[in-house]
Length: 225
Length: 272
Image 1 (cartoon, helix red, strand yellow):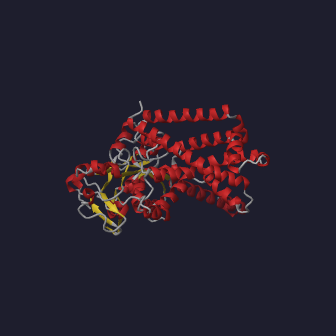
Image 2 (tube, one colour; image 1 turned 45 degrees about the vertical axis):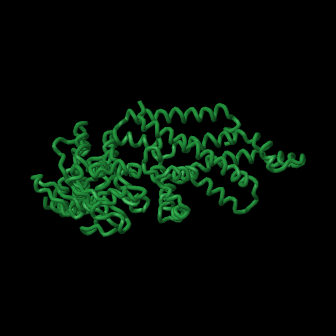
Image 3 (cartoon, each protein chain N blue to C red; image 1 turned 30 degrees about the horizontal axis):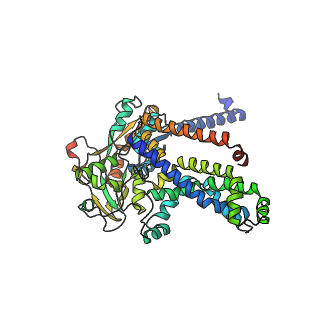
């Protein structure tokens, strides 16, 4: 049976993935909108930066976060100056890391969805004298729903599976930074395979179900990816 | 035979034979120089690099070392990792290898006895009595994962022996191995941490930051055992490396990194 520590790790991971997804939807939506409609020439730089976590080894991201968020790094000095302390080994630190790590998994599906809508519905809404914010909520959001579904599921699932970054900046603290993947590593390294199996099999089944939902119930979302 | 030797064709044949023989000898010499794959506990990284280089120079064999926590290395060995020699940070895990019938019988010996240090990269954080542990005026204290790294276990024993484990528990951050623990402290992300003396010693002294040598009676002696794995049974380089580890030359290197070396009489153990 899973131990109490395992359950704590599961809850912590769900909390991390949920919060990260929420932040990413809030930040990612305007970003994806801007990337879709901006005519700025330097846009490709931002596109590349957003996609970077797709190809970057998590160890690289983790290493730079450890250095930048540490007491000698600029981010660390800033967070200390505003009284937050340094972020490594804290839950907030993991949220920051996860937001960066899962950024393209939320922004790109949204961007695809916005591009698929095109400018025509927006122009039609404008002729009906709809305000831009009104247009967004009553025209764009319903049309882009499959994109939001994909973004939410992928952002959540990808954060759930995060390991390399957490290993670098987490510190393996129960209830704060000890997520499921760290706990699996702990069990395997301690030779407790049965305990590792509980968590690993759980992750396997959950990930499969998530993808099943994605492919089975959101065919539009799939075709846009 | 004499008239044959005058024949240029024969001379050519002879020289070919000679070259062939030389090539053959060269080939067998190359076969003698073997690779040896070693799984090394992370605390022994620095001494191993020196010892491996010396051994390679002396023997012509090549040492391919993988470093990690003893617990991780043990699991890899149990699952068929291609290591031939295992240098653990404890005795428990080489014994487990023996119990799993993955080791060559009677090949186990203690190659080093390690020391634990409370260390900070900053001056003035750690006092030479370890009082900082009782004050607890820091945010994070780094230790190695006590379930997989013997130096982490020794750190827990020390804090529990001093009666500060419970109060410090919320401040503990764990490195996957003693190497990552050292990285947490040296990068300043943890103000202090329990590391291996070998990681911070240079030319016989700890020159950087501030430190406290944890008294040996506060933790179980960290006797580090080496063992020859079944996979290395017929690898002469593996046997040679284990022999070299027990030589005076290797002992000097090991001691220079702050370890004690095992002596036949346990009473003669010295603290570095």
